[in-house]
Image 1: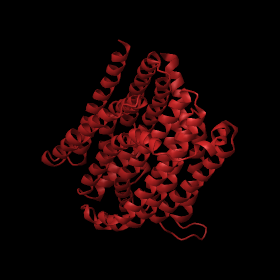
Image 2: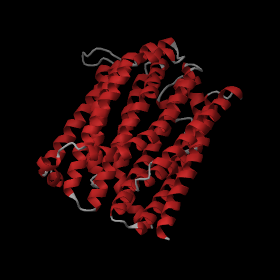
Image 3: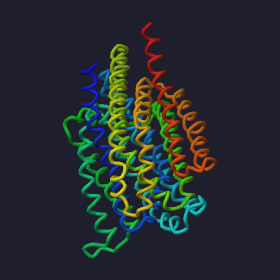
Image 4: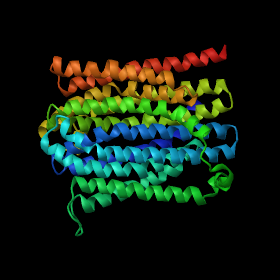
Length: 442
Protein backbone atom coordinates (compact mmCIF):
# COMPACT_ATOMS: atom_id res chain seq x y z
CA UNK A 1 0.00 0.00 0.00
CA UNK A 2 2.89 2.34 0.74
CA UNK A 3 4.24 1.81 -2.78
CA UNK A 4 0.84 2.68 -4.26
CA UNK A 5 0.65 5.83 -2.14
CA UNK A 6 4.07 6.90 -3.40
CA UNK A 7 3.03 6.29 -7.02
CA UNK A 8 -0.11 8.37 -6.53
CA UNK A 9 1.85 11.21 -4.89
CA UNK A 10 4.37 11.17 -7.75
CA UNK A 11 1.57 11.46 -10.28
CA UNK A 12 -0.32 14.02 -8.19
CA UNK A 13 2.70 16.16 -7.27
CA UNK A 14 2.88 18.12 -10.53
CA UNK A 15 -0.93 18.41 -10.61
CA UNK A 16 -0.89 19.81 -7.07
CA UNK A 17 1.87 22.26 -7.86
CA UNK A 18 0.04 23.36 -10.99
CA UNK A 19 -3.22 23.83 -9.07
CA UNK A 20 -1.43 25.76 -6.32
CA UNK A 21 0.17 28.10 -8.82
CA UNK A 22 -3.16 28.70 -10.56
CA UNK A 23 -4.73 29.40 -7.18
CA UNK A 24 -1.81 31.70 -6.44
CA UNK A 25 -2.82 33.92 -9.35
CA UNK A 26 -6.05 34.76 -7.51
CA UNK A 27 -4.26 35.16 -4.20
CA UNK A 28 -1.69 37.43 -5.87
CA UNK A 29 -4.54 39.64 -7.07
CA UNK A 30 -6.07 39.69 -3.57
CA UNK A 31 -2.76 40.54 -1.89
CA UNK A 32 -1.82 43.25 -4.39
CA UNK A 33 -5.21 44.99 -4.42
CA UNK A 34 -5.64 44.41 -0.67
CA UNK A 35 -2.67 46.68 -0.10
CA UNK A 36 -4.68 49.51 -1.71
CA UNK A 37 -7.70 49.20 0.61
CA UNK A 38 -9.91 46.62 2.28
CA UNK A 39 -12.76 47.65 -0.05
CA UNK A 40 -10.66 46.65 -3.04
CA UNK A 41 -10.05 43.31 -1.32
CA UNK A 42 -13.77 42.93 -0.62
CA UNK A 43 -14.57 43.73 -4.27
CA UNK A 44 -12.12 41.06 -5.40
CA UNK A 45 -13.81 38.62 -3.01
CA UNK A 46 -17.26 39.48 -4.35
CA UNK A 47 -16.22 38.85 -7.97
CA UNK A 48 -14.55 35.57 -7.05
CA UNK A 49 -17.71 34.49 -5.21
CA UNK A 50 -19.95 35.32 -8.19
CA UNK A 51 -17.80 33.88 -10.98
CA UNK A 52 -16.49 30.80 -9.19
CA UNK A 53 -19.77 28.93 -9.61
CA UNK A 54 -19.87 29.03 -13.45
CA UNK A 55 -16.07 28.77 -13.70
CA UNK A 56 -16.00 25.60 -11.63
CA UNK A 57 -18.85 24.20 -13.73
CA UNK A 58 -16.49 24.52 -16.68
CA UNK A 59 -13.65 22.87 -14.77
CA UNK A 60 -15.97 19.99 -13.85
CA UNK A 61 -16.79 19.56 -17.53
CA UNK A 62 -13.08 19.36 -18.38
CA UNK A 63 -12.59 16.48 -15.92
CA UNK A 64 -14.32 14.19 -18.41
CA UNK A 65 -11.26 14.61 -20.67
CA UNK A 66 -8.75 13.19 -18.18
CA UNK A 67 -11.09 10.33 -17.23
CA UNK A 68 -11.81 9.18 -20.80
CA UNK A 69 -8.22 9.71 -21.93
CA UNK A 70 -6.93 7.71 -18.94
CA UNK A 71 -9.32 4.83 -19.64
CA UNK A 72 -8.30 4.72 -23.32
CA UNK A 73 -4.64 4.98 -22.31
CA UNK A 74 -5.13 2.02 -19.94
CA UNK A 75 -6.39 0.02 -22.91
CA UNK A 76 -3.45 1.27 -25.05
CA UNK A 77 -5.88 2.82 -27.55
CA UNK A 78 -3.94 5.83 -28.86
CA UNK A 79 -6.48 6.72 -31.55
CA UNK A 80 -9.26 6.94 -28.99
CA UNK A 81 -7.04 9.13 -26.79
CA UNK A 82 -6.64 11.58 -29.69
CA UNK A 83 -10.36 11.50 -30.39
CA UNK A 84 -11.23 12.34 -26.77
CA UNK A 85 -8.71 15.20 -26.78
CA UNK A 86 -10.31 16.85 -29.82
CA UNK A 87 -13.91 16.46 -28.72
CA UNK A 88 -13.13 17.40 -25.12
CA UNK A 89 -11.23 20.53 -26.16
CA UNK A 90 -14.12 21.89 -28.21
CA UNK A 91 -16.67 20.94 -25.58
CA UNK A 92 -14.72 22.95 -22.98
CA UNK A 93 -14.20 25.86 -25.38
CA UNK A 94 -17.92 26.17 -26.10
CA UNK A 95 -18.69 25.93 -22.37
CA UNK A 96 -16.12 28.68 -21.67
CA UNK A 97 -17.63 31.05 -24.24
CA UNK A 98 -21.13 30.53 -22.82
CA UNK A 99 -19.88 31.16 -19.28
CA UNK A 100 -18.00 34.33 -20.27
CA UNK A 101 -21.00 35.75 -22.12
CA UNK A 102 -23.37 34.91 -19.26
CA UNK A 103 -21.17 36.64 -16.68
CA UNK A 104 -20.84 39.78 -18.80
CA UNK A 105 -24.56 39.95 -19.51
CA UNK A 106 -25.38 39.37 -15.84
CA UNK A 107 -22.88 41.79 -14.32
CA UNK A 108 -25.70 43.95 -12.95
CA UNK A 109 -26.40 41.33 -10.29
CA UNK A 110 -23.47 42.73 -8.32
CA UNK A 111 -25.65 45.71 -7.33
CA UNK A 112 -28.46 43.48 -6.06
CA UNK A 113 -26.65 41.27 -3.56
CA UNK A 114 -26.87 43.57 -0.55
CA UNK A 115 -23.19 44.45 -0.72
CA UNK A 116 -21.45 47.71 0.19
CA UNK A 117 -22.16 50.23 -2.64
CA UNK A 118 -18.48 51.12 -3.14
CA UNK A 119 -17.52 47.45 -3.23
CA UNK A 120 -20.18 46.68 -5.87
CA UNK A 121 -19.06 49.60 -8.05
CA UNK A 122 -15.42 48.47 -7.91
CA UNK A 123 -16.45 44.92 -8.77
CA UNK A 124 -18.17 45.43 -12.15
CA UNK A 125 -15.19 46.18 -14.44
CA UNK A 126 -13.10 43.54 -12.69
CA UNK A 127 -15.81 40.92 -13.27
CA UNK A 128 -16.02 41.76 -16.98
CA UNK A 129 -12.31 41.20 -17.56
CA UNK A 130 -12.10 38.11 -15.38
CA UNK A 131 -15.08 36.62 -17.25
CA UNK A 132 -13.24 36.83 -20.59
CA UNK A 133 -10.15 35.28 -19.00
CA UNK A 134 -12.20 32.11 -18.40
CA UNK A 135 -12.04 31.29 -22.14
CA UNK A 136 -8.25 30.84 -22.42
CA UNK A 137 -8.17 29.26 -18.96
CA UNK A 138 -10.69 26.51 -19.72
CA UNK A 139 -9.02 25.85 -23.09
CA UNK A 140 -5.74 25.46 -21.20
CA UNK A 141 -7.37 23.17 -18.62
CA UNK A 142 -8.89 20.96 -21.34
CA UNK A 143 -5.44 20.30 -22.84
CA UNK A 144 -3.98 19.94 -19.35
CA UNK A 145 -6.56 17.23 -18.59
CA UNK A 146 -5.37 15.42 -21.72
CA UNK A 147 -1.72 15.46 -20.60
CA UNK A 148 -2.76 14.53 -17.04
CA UNK A 149 -4.79 11.58 -18.35
CA UNK A 150 -1.60 10.31 -20.03
CA UNK A 151 0.14 10.68 -16.63
CA UNK A 152 2.33 13.44 -18.14
CA UNK A 153 1.50 15.86 -15.37
CA UNK A 154 4.71 17.91 -15.37
CA UNK A 155 3.97 19.67 -18.65
CA UNK A 156 1.17 21.91 -17.38
CA UNK A 157 2.90 22.25 -14.00
CA UNK A 158 5.94 23.95 -15.51
CA UNK A 159 3.77 26.41 -17.42
CA UNK A 160 1.72 27.15 -14.32
CA UNK A 161 4.90 27.90 -12.38
CA UNK A 162 6.10 30.26 -15.10
CA UNK A 163 2.72 32.00 -15.02
CA UNK A 164 3.29 33.30 -11.47
CA UNK A 165 6.18 35.72 -12.12
CA UNK A 166 4.52 36.81 -15.36
CA UNK A 167 1.30 37.63 -13.50
CA UNK A 168 3.12 39.44 -10.69
CA UNK A 169 5.10 41.54 -13.17
CA UNK A 170 2.04 42.54 -15.23
CA UNK A 171 0.14 43.36 -12.03
CA UNK A 172 3.05 45.45 -10.80
CA UNK A 173 2.90 47.46 -14.01
CA UNK A 174 -0.85 48.05 -14.29
CA UNK A 175 -2.19 47.71 -10.74
CA UNK A 176 0.21 50.28 -9.29
CA UNK A 177 1.05 52.21 -12.49
CA UNK A 178 4.80 51.56 -12.66
CA UNK A 179 7.12 52.28 -15.65
CA UNK A 180 4.70 54.80 -17.09
CA UNK A 181 1.73 52.40 -17.26
CA UNK A 182 -1.66 53.70 -16.04
CA UNK A 183 -2.62 52.92 -12.44
CA UNK A 184 -5.65 50.66 -12.97
CA UNK A 185 -5.79 49.05 -9.51
CA UNK A 186 -8.40 46.24 -9.48
CA UNK A 187 -8.99 46.47 -13.24
CA UNK A 188 -5.23 46.08 -13.72
CA UNK A 189 -5.31 42.84 -11.71
CA UNK A 190 -7.95 41.50 -14.09
CA UNK A 191 -5.87 42.46 -17.12
CA UNK A 192 -2.84 40.74 -15.60
CA UNK A 193 -4.79 37.51 -15.14
CA UNK A 194 -6.24 37.63 -18.67
CA UNK A 195 -2.87 38.19 -20.36
CA UNK A 196 -1.17 35.52 -18.26
CA UNK A 197 -3.82 32.93 -19.12
CA UNK A 198 -3.52 33.64 -22.85
CA UNK A 199 0.26 33.22 -22.69
CA UNK A 200 0.19 29.82 -20.95
CA UNK A 201 -2.53 28.55 -23.32
CA UNK A 202 -0.41 29.37 -26.37
CA UNK A 203 2.63 27.75 -24.76
CA UNK A 204 0.77 24.50 -23.91
CA UNK A 205 -0.71 24.19 -27.41
CA UNK A 206 2.77 24.60 -28.90
CA UNK A 207 4.28 21.96 -26.60
CA UNK A 208 1.59 19.35 -27.29
CA UNK A 209 1.85 20.00 -31.03
CA UNK A 210 5.63 19.57 -31.35
CA UNK A 211 6.78 17.39 -28.42
CA UNK A 212 7.65 13.75 -29.29
CA UNK A 213 5.72 12.47 -26.24
CA UNK A 214 2.44 13.53 -27.83
CA UNK A 215 3.31 12.90 -31.48
CA UNK A 216 1.36 9.63 -31.79
CA UNK A 217 -1.85 11.40 -30.76
CA UNK A 218 -1.33 14.36 -33.09
CA UNK A 219 -0.28 12.12 -36.00
CA UNK A 220 -3.73 10.49 -36.20
CA UNK A 221 -5.61 13.80 -36.19
CA UNK A 222 -6.93 13.40 -39.76
CA UNK A 223 -8.88 10.30 -38.83
CA UNK A 224 -9.66 11.05 -35.18
CA UNK A 225 -10.21 14.81 -34.97
CA UNK A 226 -13.88 14.71 -35.77
CA UNK A 227 -16.75 15.87 -33.59
CA UNK A 228 -19.12 12.99 -32.85
CA UNK A 229 -22.41 13.18 -31.01
CA UNK A 230 -21.77 9.81 -29.32
CA UNK A 231 -18.42 11.01 -27.98
CA UNK A 232 -19.87 14.31 -26.78
CA UNK A 233 -22.60 12.36 -24.97
CA UNK A 234 -19.97 10.14 -23.34
CA UNK A 235 -18.02 13.19 -22.18
CA UNK A 236 -21.19 14.87 -20.93
CA UNK A 237 -22.14 11.71 -19.00
CA UNK A 238 -19.08 12.30 -16.84
CA UNK A 239 -18.78 16.06 -17.27
CA UNK A 240 -22.28 17.18 -16.29
CA UNK A 241 -22.39 15.36 -12.90
CA UNK A 242 -18.77 16.39 -12.24
CA UNK A 243 -19.72 19.99 -13.02
CA UNK A 244 -22.73 19.77 -10.76
CA UNK A 245 -20.64 18.34 -7.91
CA UNK A 246 -17.99 21.03 -8.23
CA UNK A 247 -20.59 23.74 -8.86
CA UNK A 248 -22.66 22.87 -5.80
CA UNK A 249 -19.60 22.85 -3.58
CA UNK A 250 -18.19 26.09 -4.94
CA UNK A 251 -21.69 27.54 -5.09
CA UNK A 252 -22.17 26.86 -1.41
CA UNK A 253 -18.97 28.73 -0.60
CA UNK A 254 -19.90 31.53 -3.02
CA UNK A 255 -23.41 31.98 -1.61
CA UNK A 256 -21.99 31.90 1.90
CA UNK A 257 -19.53 34.61 0.89
CA UNK A 258 -22.37 36.75 -0.44
CA UNK A 259 -24.32 36.19 2.80
CA UNK A 260 -21.28 37.28 4.79
CA UNK A 261 -21.02 40.35 2.55
CA UNK A 262 -24.40 41.51 3.90
CA UNK A 263 -22.72 41.77 7.29
CA UNK A 264 -20.36 44.44 5.93
CA UNK A 265 -17.15 44.94 3.98
CA UNK A 266 -14.95 44.18 7.00
CA UNK A 267 -16.51 40.74 7.54
CA UNK A 268 -16.35 40.09 3.78
CA UNK A 269 -12.66 40.95 3.63
CA UNK A 270 -11.89 38.73 6.66
CA UNK A 271 -13.87 35.88 5.11
CA UNK A 272 -11.96 36.23 1.84
CA UNK A 273 -8.63 35.98 3.68
CA UNK A 274 -9.61 32.78 5.51
CA UNK A 275 -11.22 31.30 2.39
CA UNK A 276 -8.15 32.07 0.27
CA UNK A 277 -5.94 30.22 2.75
CA UNK A 278 -8.36 27.27 2.97
CA UNK A 279 -8.75 27.11 -0.82
CA UNK A 280 -4.98 27.17 -1.26
CA UNK A 281 -4.63 24.21 1.14
CA UNK A 282 -7.50 22.43 -0.62
CA UNK A 283 -5.60 22.47 -3.92
CA UNK A 284 -3.27 19.79 -2.53
CA UNK A 285 -6.26 17.57 -1.70
CA UNK A 286 -7.81 18.37 -5.07
CA UNK A 287 -4.61 17.46 -6.90
CA UNK A 288 -4.24 14.26 -4.88
CA UNK A 289 -7.86 13.40 -5.71
CA UNK A 290 -7.19 13.95 -9.41
CA UNK A 291 -4.09 11.77 -9.28
CA UNK A 292 -6.00 9.01 -7.51
CA UNK A 293 -8.90 9.38 -9.95
CA UNK A 294 -6.61 9.05 -12.99
CA UNK A 295 -4.99 5.92 -11.54
CA UNK A 296 -8.40 4.46 -10.69
CA UNK A 297 -9.59 5.16 -14.27
CA UNK A 298 -6.54 3.42 -15.66
CA UNK A 299 -7.11 0.36 -13.45
CA UNK A 300 -10.84 0.46 -14.21
CA UNK A 301 -10.03 0.39 -17.93
CA UNK A 302 -8.02 -2.79 -17.23
CA UNK A 303 -10.86 -4.15 -15.02
CA UNK A 304 -8.36 -4.61 -12.16
CA UNK A 305 -10.40 -4.30 -8.96
CA UNK A 306 -7.54 -5.33 -6.71
CA UNK A 307 -5.55 -2.30 -7.86
CA UNK A 308 -8.61 -0.07 -7.52
CA UNK A 309 -8.99 -1.13 -3.88
CA UNK A 310 -5.34 -0.55 -2.95
CA UNK A 311 -5.12 2.76 -4.82
CA UNK A 312 -8.30 3.96 -3.12
CA UNK A 313 -7.20 3.04 0.41
CA UNK A 314 -3.72 4.50 0.03
CA UNK A 315 -5.05 7.75 -1.46
CA UNK A 316 -7.60 8.16 1.32
CA UNK A 317 -4.99 7.59 4.05
CA UNK A 318 -2.74 10.15 2.37
CA UNK A 319 -5.61 12.63 2.37
CA UNK A 320 -6.31 12.15 6.08
CA UNK A 321 -2.65 12.67 7.01
CA UNK A 322 -2.45 15.79 4.85
CA UNK A 323 -5.65 17.16 6.41
CA UNK A 324 -4.26 16.75 9.91
CA UNK A 325 -1.01 18.53 9.01
CA UNK A 326 -2.95 21.38 7.37
CA UNK A 327 -5.11 21.79 10.46
CA UNK A 328 -2.06 22.07 12.71
CA UNK A 329 -0.48 24.64 10.40
CA UNK A 330 -3.64 26.78 10.25
CA UNK A 331 -3.97 26.82 14.04
CA UNK A 332 -0.32 27.77 14.54
CA UNK A 333 -0.34 30.50 11.85
CA UNK A 334 -3.88 31.86 12.30
CA UNK A 335 -2.70 35.29 13.48
CA UNK A 336 0.15 35.68 10.99
CA UNK A 337 -1.35 34.58 7.68
CA UNK A 338 -4.04 37.32 7.56
CA UNK A 339 -1.34 40.00 7.76
CA UNK A 340 -0.14 38.99 4.29
CA UNK A 341 -3.49 40.22 2.87
CA UNK A 342 -4.40 43.30 4.89
CA UNK A 343 -3.17 45.29 7.90
CA UNK A 344 -6.55 46.53 9.14
CA UNK A 345 -6.67 45.41 12.78
CA UNK A 346 -10.37 44.50 12.77
CA UNK A 347 -10.14 42.53 9.53
CA UNK A 348 -7.10 40.61 10.76
CA UNK A 349 -8.73 39.84 14.12
CA UNK A 350 -11.89 38.38 12.54
CA UNK A 351 -9.85 36.46 9.97
CA UNK A 352 -7.76 34.87 12.74
CA UNK A 353 -10.94 33.44 14.32
CA UNK A 354 -12.19 32.14 10.97
CA UNK A 355 -8.84 30.41 10.42
CA UNK A 356 -9.64 28.18 13.42
CA UNK A 357 -12.78 26.92 11.70
CA UNK A 358 -10.84 26.48 8.47
CA UNK A 359 -8.42 24.30 10.43
CA UNK A 360 -11.24 22.15 11.80
CA UNK A 361 -12.58 21.15 8.40
CA UNK A 362 -9.23 20.34 6.76
CA UNK A 363 -9.57 16.55 7.20
CA UNK A 364 -13.18 16.51 5.99
CA UNK A 365 -12.32 18.79 3.05
CA UNK A 366 -9.46 16.55 1.96
CA UNK A 367 -11.32 13.25 2.31
CA UNK A 368 -14.51 14.41 0.59
CA UNK A 369 -12.48 15.62 -2.41
CA UNK A 370 -10.73 12.26 -2.59
CA UNK A 371 -14.06 10.41 -2.27
CA UNK A 372 -15.45 12.33 -5.27
CA UNK A 373 -12.30 11.70 -7.30
CA UNK A 374 -12.12 7.97 -6.60
CA UNK A 375 -15.77 7.45 -7.52
CA UNK A 376 -15.38 9.53 -10.69
CA UNK A 377 -12.50 7.26 -11.68
CA UNK A 378 -15.04 4.41 -11.85
CA UNK A 379 -17.55 6.58 -13.76
CA UNK A 380 -19.75 6.68 -10.64
CA UNK A 381 -20.93 10.28 -10.73
CA UNK A 382 -24.72 10.43 -10.31
CA UNK A 383 -25.19 9.26 -6.70
CA UNK A 384 -22.17 11.25 -5.44
CA UNK A 385 -23.78 14.35 -6.96
CA UNK A 386 -26.86 13.76 -4.79
CA UNK A 387 -24.66 13.31 -1.72
CA UNK A 388 -22.85 16.59 -2.39
CA UNK A 389 -26.14 18.43 -2.96
CA UNK A 390 -27.54 17.25 0.37
CA UNK A 391 -24.30 17.92 2.27
CA UNK A 392 -23.97 21.53 1.15
CA UNK A 393 -27.44 22.80 0.33
CA UNK A 394 -29.66 20.85 2.72
CA UNK A 395 -27.26 20.67 5.68
CA UNK A 396 -24.30 23.05 5.31
CA UNK A 397 -25.81 26.37 4.21
CA UNK A 398 -28.95 26.19 6.42
CA UNK A 399 -26.79 25.32 9.43
CA UNK A 400 -24.43 28.19 8.67
CA UNK A 401 -27.28 30.67 8.22
CA UNK A 402 -28.87 29.54 11.48
CA UNK A 403 -25.62 29.94 13.40
CA UNK A 404 -24.77 33.27 11.75
CA UNK A 405 -28.07 35.08 12.26
CA UNK A 406 -30.24 33.21 14.77
CA UNK A 407 -27.34 32.60 17.17
CA UNK A 408 -25.64 35.90 16.21
CA UNK A 409 -22.26 34.31 15.42
CA UNK A 410 -21.71 36.32 12.23
CA UNK A 411 -19.15 35.01 9.74
CA UNK A 412 -18.02 32.32 12.21
CA UNK A 413 -21.50 30.79 12.06
CA UNK A 414 -21.26 30.38 8.29
CA UNK A 415 -17.96 28.56 8.75
CA UNK A 416 -19.55 26.15 11.23
CA UNK A 417 -21.94 25.27 8.42
CA UNK A 418 -18.91 24.51 6.21
CA UNK A 419 -17.57 22.09 8.83
CA UNK A 420 -20.88 20.21 9.17
CA UNK A 421 -21.52 19.94 5.42
CA UNK A 422 -18.01 18.82 4.51
CA UNK A 423 -17.96 16.14 7.22
CA UNK A 424 -21.29 14.70 6.07
CA UNK A 425 -20.13 14.62 2.43
CA UNK A 426 -16.79 12.98 3.26
CA UNK A 427 -18.41 10.12 5.19
CA UNK A 428 -21.02 9.30 2.57
CA UNK A 429 -18.68 9.44 -0.45
CA UNK A 430 -15.95 7.23 0.96
CA UNK A 431 -18.42 4.72 2.36
CA UNK A 432 -19.89 4.38 -1.14
CA UNK A 433 -16.49 3.89 -2.78
CA UNK A 434 -15.51 0.96 -0.57
CA UNK A 435 -19.02 -0.50 -0.67
CA UNK A 436 -18.84 -0.64 -4.49
CA UNK A 437 -15.44 -2.34 -4.34
CA UNK A 438 -16.68 -4.92 -1.84
CA UNK A 439 -19.64 -5.67 -4.10
CA UNK A 440 -17.36 -6.27 -7.10
CA UNK A 441 -14.94 -8.48 -5.20
CA UNK A 442 -17.63 -10.89 -3.93
